[in-house]
Amino acid sequence: MNKIIKLLVWPVMIIPAVYLAITWNKIPEKVAMHFDLKGNVDRFGSKNELLTTVIVLTITNAVIYLILTNIYRIDPKKYAAENKDRLQRLASGLVLFLCALLCMIIYSSANGNISFNIGFVLAAMGLLFAFIGNYMHNIRPNYFAGFRLPWALENEENWKKTHSLAGKLWFAGGLLLAVTCLFLPPEAAYIFFFAVMIIITAIPIIFSFRYYLKQKKKPLQ
Image (cartoon, rainbow, N blue to C red; front, side):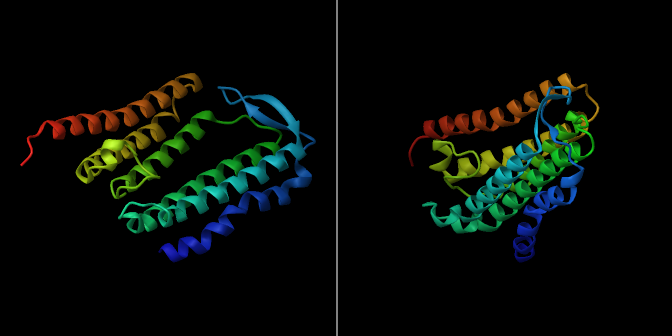
C-alpha cells in the first residue's frame, strides 16, 4: 500500500498546477485572494498573484511531504524507523488536503470569484484532524510528530497513554467538526471549531502532565 501511495502522491501534488493551466484562459484579470469570516471576498489580486500562490503552496506542499517522510532518518529516538510508514500516510493526507484547498481557490477564481463555504472548509479540516487522530495512537516516541512533551518523550508509557487518549479525542473531535460546521452560521462555526481544537489539544497535555506527576510520586522499587 505504501508503495502505491508513494507513486501517486507526486502526480496528486501537481493536480492544482494542471487545473490552473487548463482554466487559465477562463480566469479573469482580477481574482479573489482573501475571504472574510462569512466566506465573501474581501481582497482581490491579479491572476499572476494567483499563479504565484499556487506555485508557492505547491512547493510548500512538496517540502512538508519530504520532511515528514524523511525525519525518521535524523530522529535519535530508537523507534524512529517504526514511525516511517505512519508518517508516510500522514504526509500523504496533508498533501491531499492542501491540493483540494488549492483546487477550491482556483475553481472560485475561474467561476467568477464565488464565495467560499466556510463551513465546508472547516468541516474538511475536521476530517483532516480525524485522519491524523486515527494514526496518532500508533506513533512511537519521536522528536518531530505528536505531543512532544518532555515528560512524555522520556517515558514510553506516558507517551503511549497520552497518544492513545489524543488519538481518540482527535478522531471523535474531527468527526464532530466535520458534521457540525456544515450546519452552523459562519461565525458560530469558527467559534465552535477553535473551541473543539483547544479542548482536544489541552486534554492530552493536562493528562500527560498529571500522569508524569503521578509516576514521579511513586516510590522507587
